[in-house]
Figure (cartoon, rainbow, N blue to C red):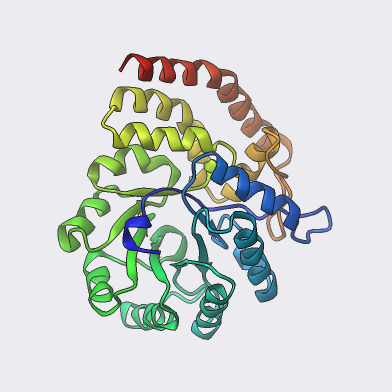
Length: 311
């Protein structure tokens, strides 16, 4: 996987479970195949949305293997690398390479909030563990570790296989900050669902997205229109999408995104504890938003395509 491949829509996939909470590999294979068929250009497994913290080491490797077998050489499989210890993360990176993954998305270690000296040592170890192309994941909101542009410059100078950063601070100015310091050395991805329209004009090349699990065609279309500079059409689609995209940016994002999948017949709402499925008013409020936006989808998409035909 080369630097040029870090562009476009990369789904951070959910992990489907059976009713007994074992991984549903048949559903997983069908899901990633559908996402690729719908225009997604890579698959990112074992991220936060994939409930990676609830998966055993063996389950993680089996998930990567299922994804790899399902899509073959059509698109790269990118493995999310996170764990409680650096040694655990190094081992997972090597296992990901062994099963055929072409890229890694490298997260800070779980639980312990390290300073930059410690954080850099962790990233150094994982980046050195394989020759695979890597994306660094910066999410100070969730992990309380903030990797700034100057930090990225240190890592990029030492690791030729660091090719991208997933920026999830929620501040679109971080995209331009990275571009200012590093130029074209790293590709920058929007890491939150509700920032892609703003991030592309600022210099982002791609989107690691969550709602794409339920709505891949719409996700790809937003990116295509924005990259083409067709901002009026992109904005119309994006503003329809926003009430759903904002599900990605709250604590129960996994439950919400899986609920959208379930409502659209594209997955199950089942999650692993400590998460529990949404119930009561919370579930009903989410369903009201989902059903309202879905009732408008065909009209919005038709208007978008009509505008494209007239363009």
